[in-house]
Image (cartoon, rainbow, N blue to C red; front, side):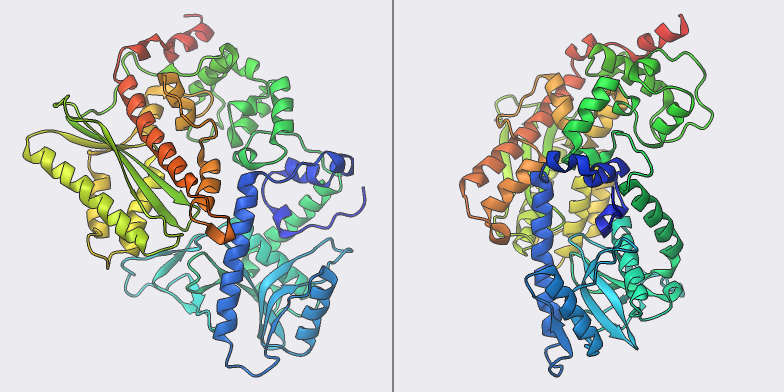
Length: 547
């Protein structure tokens, strides 16, 4: 295998994927990106074009030649145009491509290079949020974050935001800084260099101190290049990245054949098990020794043994307690939110059940905007959802009835409850952040995902699509899922140039309705008697103790 040339994408994520992507013998077997990956790529490209247009507008007052947009059709032409712009001392170079460095093994491009002194600061644009608003900055505390307006490179302490760091963004900027430094074009010594990061909100440029990560980048780059060149062997392991990887079908087949322990235990816990000689699911299922002293992570060691036994015997769930429990109420509302990437939440679906009045129909109510995200109309639909939810809550209280609203994995719902209050607080009917936080903190907001984890060991994951079928629920659409819904939404609103297909709106509403129905069926099953047919974790563990 020849010398590998790495782009920024190769610096993070699964090392085995990197090895497979670069193995020449696998070239003919490579498959294309998943539909979800292609959607993310297209959305990111659209966002970058929009922000680059905005950057051009901010600099439109400058004289000719000060701002250069590199738009040549081929890579060689883009590199030549970028170098010519740097040689001419352009103030802003948009869509810049740096020359591929075959000797050092690096390639890269920047959405913008902005001149500072005799060199350039690299700026990249990403399609996710990179800052979080700080509601009440602390007086007298020096902000750790520096930001600059989009109109020019003027970094200054920013007490209104905190940084939402993602490693792949920082590594990409570090690679660009290294390349500029090799060309003698970096604006400062490498240990003092800064990079710029523009996120989804595109309301500022975050200044990233790259000197702090230079040594880390060098070590990572050296190892990753060695992997790409076949000098360091890798093996498949199941990680979170697998679900969106085009190599997963191949890796999964290998792992299942090997009965690899990573299928039930992930991350550092799998490393700990390998260190004590437990490499297969069967070995873990039969484990009779002490818990490893250096056991880490949130999953308890006995749970991993139960998961392994369940995997071997094809048991979908195992009870933690004799009688599972979940909070119930007189009036119950199941809630499911649909969002698109980080652009916003376009749909809040609800299903109300009044257990004190069997004649009251159980009706699905969606609160939705079909204006393409991001849109202010999102605030209108959220306000209507909130008003309806609170009116039902208040009516239950006034009638002396208990009330509870349920979701599956409140992390997502809470994020958009709070985010909607923050972003649309000036619109009629939108609650304050304080009001939303009070509701989230109350015992009337119940997370069924947490209830599942509290009541069961889940050997094959805790996702709603995996757990609800155990309770007897099935989705009407065979393709239903988060990844597919992204494609449906893009067509439903003709997002980013997609062809408009109004039938996808009905499909999304049906999918959302099924999600709230699944949540209802699952929580009622947890509280019922059929769940008692599942085995108890204590009984499975007793097999290994000889009890």
